[in-house]
Image (cartoon, rainbow, N blue to C red; front, top):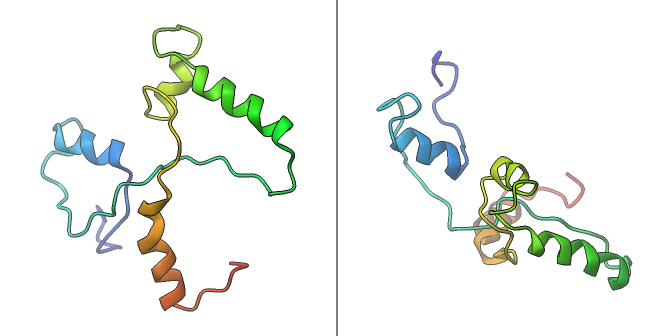
Length: 107
């Protein structure tokens, strides 16, 4: 976009908020569409993976504490203060676009 090779781009909320705080390229961009809120980082597994394998992983994620110096760098890298359950409803516009464009399930 900055070198006029594209008219639009998708950026994550953390970057957009930094732009809005005048930390990055103030006034360089304007929003023309915003997606519904969704969880930007999801961990998925095949349904065949047993819960005794997944439950400890989830438990450890949710136990991460912003005030713990060993945990904070990981949370900061993800732009999080804590892990939460995913909000899948925010993906509906993406699912609809995939259907509308007839994109195959193996893309």
